[in-house]
Image (cartoon, one colour):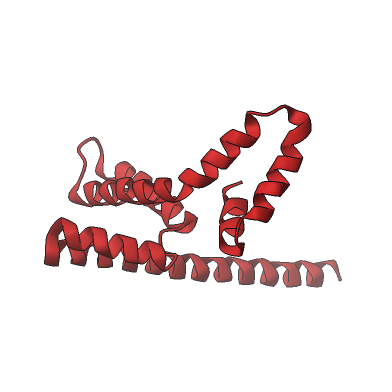
Amino acid sequence: AERGALLVLNEFVLSVANSTQSALGTLHSRQMDKVAALCTAAQRGGTPALHAAAYELFERGGLDADFVNWLALAIDAADAADGELPSQWQLVLRLIRQGTHAILQADYTQDIEVLRHVMSIPPAGRKDLLWTSLQEMNGESARHFEVTL
């Protein structure tokens, strides 16, 4: 009975590992598609086309935490593989990360200002002010603010 339970557990763990590997492969493919789209835009139309493609990707939700985290992992992996001198791939990833951070920073500026205001008042009133600020925001802005928190 114990051996049977261990076999079932082993099958479950292998299934989870396979599902995770598949999901990570899909995520990697999705992120690589974004990098390819940005590179293609830059090749075809230079900086203006790259900016337009990046903002379009941002508007569709493609410049998100998953992409930022994937960029960090991809840069770390490239750094480990390429040694001291950066490769073209590393430079491309770093440039995309820099642009992504600039776009996201502008998007979070309003949220940061609300947080600064909330933190500037005494602790006793912070919760009330935070809830009041959230209630005054439209639905999308409130969801974005909650994600920022």
